[in-house]
Length: 273
Image 1 (cartoon, rainbow, N blue to C red):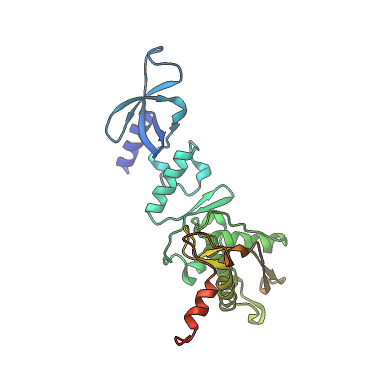
Image 2 (cartoon, rainbow, N blue to C red):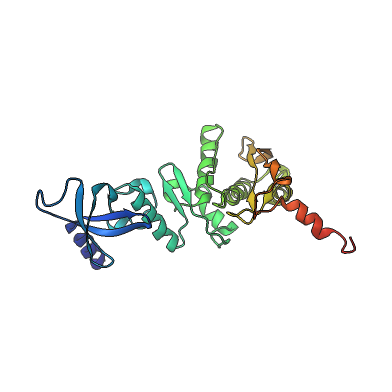
């Protein structure tokens, strides 16, 4: 629109920057000053929030991107790639319920906490057979890309989920498996999402606990493997567990729980006991 074009022109006529401080980052305008008017290593800025003028260290200032990049789908395409700009774009996307963002060949997923409608079989069908560049960022597009590469290259594919406790690694692992099983199908229904959910329910009971970071945190690591036949159907699945936090059985951290299974047992005990 004309308003957007006008805003873009106004942006380029001024040098917008992020002032990095202990509470985060704030948008500001970098002001031109006469040579020698400021100590070496200092720059003058005007904060957009209240118009105040500040002399700050140049190392505390990072270039800001035009509004066009506020909700960019791939962080690698930012004109100025720095921490403040990345965080700003992620925050803008999250505010628009866009929790998935490409970062080059990787993907950043912000845990939406709830289970929104973006994860459903109807949405899965929208990504079936598509190339990554033809779809919006989504955990399903990552799964589809791996499946497509599997069929075209006939080579093993891996998706590694990284993040702190409560970031949604386990949940996204389930989304990936549900997508692959739903889209690829299984030979003679050898493997299904229902079977996977049943297996993981048992693993969750013996391996999950409440922590200060997550009400139902996985206290073990696992590798899930799916085997496919020449036609691209799932033929079998396996899960390898490791690094179980065994010490939690006898020495649980203060304010946290032991494994869920013990509470399930207590809940099922006859009240007379």
